[in-house]
Amino acid sequence: MYYIPKRNHLKKTFLVLFSCVHFFCLSIFASGEYQSVGARHLAIGSASVTYSDVFSTNYNQAGLGFISSISIGASTEIRYINTGIYNAQIAVAVPIKKAGTFAYACNFFGDKNYNEIRTGIAYGKAFGKKVSIGVRFDYMRATIATLGSKNAFSFDFGVQYRVINNLIIGAHVSNPSRFKVDSQKYNERFATIMQVGARYIAYNKVSISAEFEKDLEHKPNFKFGVEYNPISILFIRAGIQTQNIQSSFGLGIQTKGLQIDFGASYHPQLGFSPGISLVYNLKKIEKATE
Image 1: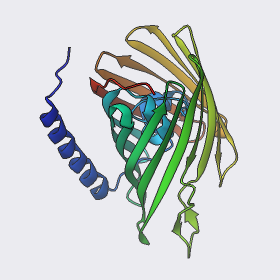
Image 2: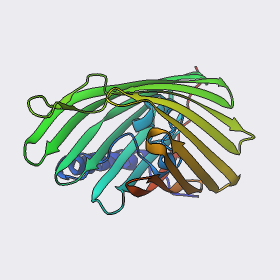
Image 3: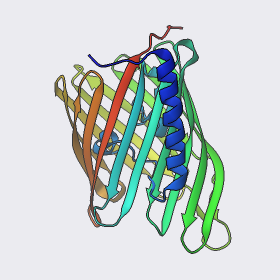
């Protein structure tokens, strides 16, 4: 049994949290590449286009439409352990009965020489129990130590469809606007990524996901992930990506209101990238079925 604040206190809490997160996003030069957020998703090889949790703000905003609890999530990852490259996100998702789920997220990736900040609002809306659509609007900033910063606005959108109770398919497009970081010297762009995938849940114990991902600047990437729930509070996970043959693994502990996840990926040339994330569910919202 966990404490649920009164409505007016809850509103004040979220206003303070929103302000702190936004200030934090715009003042720190340590960021998170938004394709890998949350230790749960890191552990399953980021094959996450069909998942529904607070980190759907990153992978597929349509997943927000199926959320029934006010959720706060925070994650951090150290890329390749000793490089000083940090990857992190803070996200808040608030479902409002018939109106859908509104969310705020801030992503960081990089180090003192190059870093990216991506902060924005997201929205997901479920239509009945089968279909959900979502979108995210972002402010993006890239900073190169020798060249300064470049700013832009972009958006993501996605869809999820529950074919049957234990089979979900999803699709997502990230940054279709193809924003350039620097057009004069390096011609670098923020990544534009298209994803499509499916997830099958067997006996409410094993979740198997497969995903096709295409970055316009790179070769296709195939992702596979498995999540096993042997007992109510424990989750064991593993995944693999064909891009550089990266493997991943991890575990999670989940209680009524709190979820703690640990994960790591392994790059055959660069080594391990460990991560941890926390998700806290404050209050369940009774959502009307349409």
